[in-house]
Amino acid sequence: MAQKITKFQKTWIMRNPIVQFFKFIWLNYKILSVVAMGHGGTREKQL
Amino acid sequence: MAKIVVLGAGISGHTAVSYLRKDLSSEHEVVVVSPNSNYQWVPSNIWVGIGRMKAEQCTFPLAPLYKKKNINYIQAKVTTFHPEGDSEINKGFVKAEYVVGDKKGEVVKVDYDYLINATGPKLNFAATEGLKPGTFGTTSVCTYDHAQHAWKDLKVQIDRMKKGEHVKILIGTGHSKSTCQGAAFEYIMNVEQELNRHGVRDKATVTWISNEYEVGDFGMDGLTIKMGSKLMPSKDLIEMVFADRGINVIKRAGVHKIEEGKAHYETLDGEHHVEEFDLAMLIPAFSGHGFKAYDKAGQDITEKLFRGFMVVDADYTPRPYEEWTVQDWPETYQNPSYKNIFAPGIAFAPPHAISKPRTSKNGTPISPTPPRTGMPSGISAKLVADNIVHMIKNNTQEIHHLGSMGNMGAACIASTGFGMLDGRGVTITTNPIVPDYVKYPETGRINSKTIGDLGLAGHWVKLALHYAFLYKAKMKPFWWLIPE
Image (tube, rainbow over all chains, first blue to last red; front, top):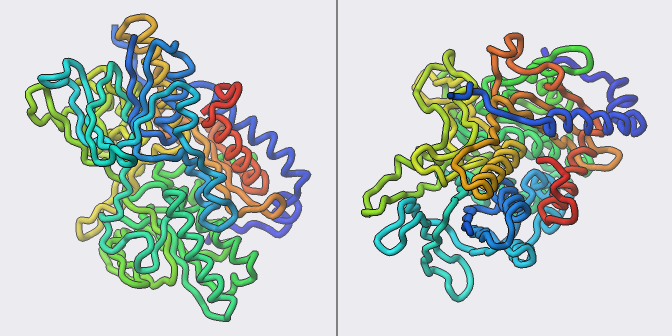
């Protein structure tokens, strides 16, 4: 049985432009922290 | 002076070209060979497919930009690879056939010092009998052209519903080995929202069909997502979203045949079923382009360069799922036989899937192939460009920039409804893309960097990325400050 999104969550959080504005800033920060903070290899360097 | 040839001008090819031109002086030649006349920001095609965005808003012509930036542009499709040259040319070259203009049909040899194969996937509609956009009630959003037709077809169905007719809409994967479930997920959610906007939602049965074992697999073996303070499997998140929007789900299904208004599919338990539809958008299988390669003497050496997609520095040793490691995944996207050839983005042959491979009782493999679209395409293209620039500037064969999908983050920003105030989105970030259960035994990924969120902000983020990435692709001032 799937969990449900409550009416409260939908109306007052997910569709609330003021709450979502701050979410927008937070999401951008999170995305940048995940994507722009570098990447690399997984294998040990062979000497 | 070096000559770098880039095959393809999609997200991966165009990213590589942009960085090569930015970081190399004009004495070095950068050449693009692509059959396409336009750059397209593919992630926004789903909005073209619901009529909320024009194709012109997601595309721009390549020729004027390349002319302005001193990039040679050959509008042609590659036919064969000759990494050792031939009796006439003593260096690697590709043969390409012009697709437009006076030279249409003419074959030209394009020689290179470095070659980037960013030809992406072939949309292999033919792998599913009867699956072809525009026939039997099926559409596609894989290209902006397909998406424009998808909107026309959807509009016809909306008009029928407005007249009181009931319509069945089927969206998902059109082959047992399809990938790119994310695009289909976005499209089904946007279609559902548009039906609401047009006041006809109660006249439609909307069904998701997928080769995933569980919804939310996305070809990445699913994710454990941090939602607020809780950890939640992506399966639960997507099930919750589908239930909220009244979308039916058919999973573990390999579509193998399309007839007028009917999708034939087999499930993992070996049973065969038929799902009827009035409109279907089914993502096809992706495959390589079937390129051939020849050595200096003209002998076929295709297996050195291709195994479907291009062979790179991955470990292709066949192993069971339990023995897969992140070390199998490529780090440099360099061909092991010809060190001046690279294949970032979707063009490289993955060592194996990410999701657990599953086979039906009849022996049909039904599971997603690994996604390499979007961010991994851009990131791998940039690191390939960085490595080539380093090799040229330092006259070395050393490779410094590494980027394995087992040590790389990505964000999947899925719009689930268009609108500045009534839009919706599902935002998922993951790090790494390929789970590393040795480093992160709990979930295979870094919990603090594998997060999820539902709400309007996700739609705003996706819209912001649309404008940001088109700005970047047009190489406007300081474009390089925008990360991949």
